[in-house]
Image (cartoon, rainbow, N blue to C red; front, side, top):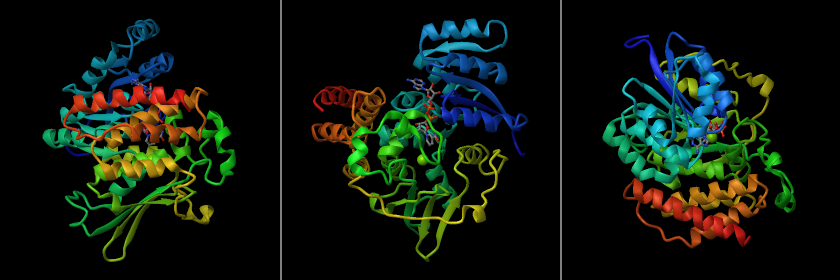
Length: 394
Ligand code: NAD
Ligand code: MG
């Protein structure tokens, strides 16, 4: 490797699905990466275990109580200092010693720590798509102002990134006609639509190809995940909604494609394992081992493609509509979705009412311009309160 040989990494959300995969990749390359900070919300015992293995400078938990618990668990075993709350998260995301920040907190809770990393000019690996979706223009402005490098971890966006030239100032200049955003269609692609109202959280979280956290698993089952990714792609690649097409590809082998003016269609393929995009983004522009076996196309046999069923998956239509309207519409969509998904996971809302709740909140919220972080957070809060009230009537 050239230049600085040891990169220091903060993993925001290290106990989650992406966090654990990130640590798996980092552990394969101890000469190249050292862990600066790890963070978790509730799973303190798991975080303590990770601290024993990686001996980070800091570990961050959300509350003082959890902080005490973690200190007691670690006792004198590590040199790790325990910090608490949003301030701690922002501090380890922006500290001078940090080179790379993996943003893998789920939902709006990740916005401020991720922005702190962006504002501090870090190399930011973005898994936390909700942060970008809810704050798009504000997030991009911070990125431009600091010159931070943002690399997509979402497998689709990582695939698109890999299929585009680098750097890519504009899709038009690069000869791109269209981005084909692939999605498996989730666990209910072929389920009788009349039965969808009674699906359980565990059924919704049993994704056929990917193992993920519960919130994104439900998003995949409603296809809101593809909707959030549609919005994410518009922001990341400065694409107009008309330049993006969702293609259902049940096998999740092609992770997305870019269609060029000359008739070329570039695809990035691989086994469905998040360690591939994580390793790609960590090492970019180099390549490192991710622990992922090579794709066996012969064993795979076939790849299928279909158009999405917008009647079965109304969340996808809502998300595409939100980015078309622009301004605060994606912020409201994201907030209402987070509240509805949580209610579904807690057994308080039917699966099919998730889309209905989001639509109601969107229809009763005026669209405004996102002029700053305070505006984003106020809109997010209002939409959450409205969503909670709306759930009562469904
Ligand atoms: P997860 O639920 O498994 O993990 C979430 C992590 O965030 C945990 O470490 C948790 O402790 C932390 N967290 C949760 N709430 C928090 C809060 N209020 N404050 C601070 N920390 C909090 O989720 P995941 O599947 O790892 O997904 C993480 C992010 O990556 C999501 O935005 C998701 O959309 C995105 N993503 C995940 C996958 C995947 O395969 N899992 C793929 C693409 C994108
Ligand atoms: Mg994805």
